[in-house]
Image 1: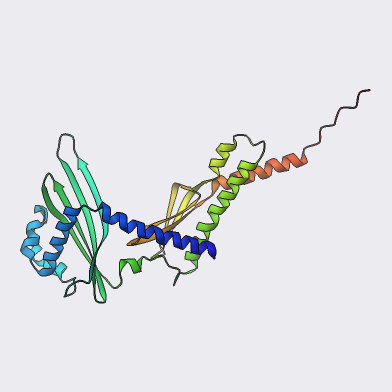
Image 2 (image 1 turned 90 degrees about the vertical axis):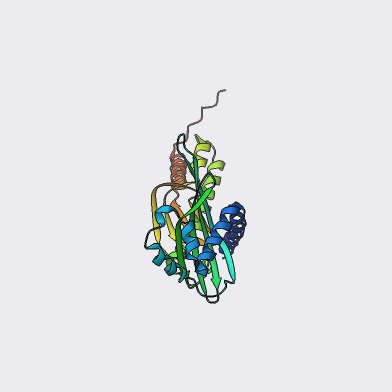
Length: 269
């Protein structure tokens, strides 16, 4: 149980640092522009929103589509607005201008409900335009939805969590046994091998969905990753290095114990 608590504390600490990092890496000017477009959408200023759109999005049906998007926001002023996602992609063709694409996602909190709004912006030289708008109402905040908690989790979640703790300990045990074993050829190669796992299986902690990566390598055969606003994943792999070494050690020790003793030379007088 103490190991479980330590694992949870480590995950929560990582979540806090990820939020700080997200705030720092977000492009300030583009973020302000994205929030301005969302504010215009919520206010019903569809002409300004349409003007911000890329030409390929200014279809005749846009006049009907924008009010539907605006209707997904509750009436009133949001209690909080949080940046929950920021991704930047830079592209450049040979001899062509640099193009930058930004994906900025915000969570709007209203009394009793939340809305996630994602804007995709494209920037070429000094021209910035909107190439995508996605609005999703939520009954719970992303932080609550994707929280790493044991409450309400089934047996499969517990199995993955226990494996994510036990398998690395097994790898460390094999590593120490390898380092301490006398007479082992290529000892340090074996030692490194004990820390490697293959064939990764993961579980989405929020949904319970399983994923398989057959061609994969995982240090210590287990890992967790996620963020405050996206699902956590617990990954475990088969500790092939540790298993192979412990089997090899078992064979060597058995051979040593069954080897006939070399007769000593008779004394010479």
